[in-house]
Amino acid sequence: MKVNGIAGMNTQMGHMGITQGGDSYSKNIQNQIASAQNQLKELSSNKEMSLEEKVKKRQEIQKQIADLNNQLRQHQVEQRKQKQQEKKTSMDDMLGTGNTRKAKAGKKGRGLSQAGMKALISADSALSQAQAGEQITTQISGQANVLKSEIHMDKQAGLDTKAKEEELAKVEENLAGATASQIESLGKASEEMKEASQGNEETEETKEEKRSKSSGAKQEGDSAASDADTGAVESSVTGPAPSSYKHVDIQL
Image (cartoon, rainbow, N blue to C red):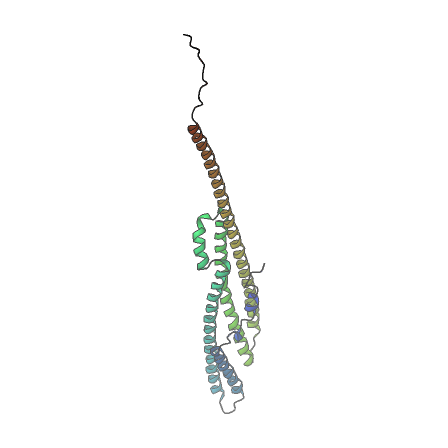
């Protein structure tokens, strides 16, 4: 199933990498990394420096690149945390777990059916799993970013990157699995919320039917009592029927 706002999550996860940081701070760090990598290239062809000086300079440049990569990764993690918070707020609104929906649910909570309550608990559990999955995908994505950066740097330095490329393939496979699991949890949470909402509506309809039946029975009772009172009043106004007059002859 597809849930609004979730269908594009795989695409978003797939494009995570060093190019993710599109802001000026990230671009600045990336430019510094590129500049340092160019220095490594030029270092090997520098004939004015001794071999010992080249080794020492190479170590300094590699340390500088590693520090810059750490800064970039930390900045990307902070950006992802901010996006996660925004996504969580959007997710709460979509699934009906926001403050507004919670306030409404609190007012109708007494009318929630047992099945609806069970569905609501299941939805909350599924949502928690999805949020935990988001943290896992963030961590795995960070590992992938670091490996990509190291592979790129090693290639520029002419080093063998086979082992790191194999490790990156495993990390990306884990990332795909974690992303799929997260989407499944979100879909389950959305479905459970729909069931909880339907259970609540059915309970409200049952209450309305009971109120209608109770109101109808009361009206019939009032009508019967009114008819009885009307008959009693008519009887008291008319009074008893006069007895027939008996003629009596009197002889003198």
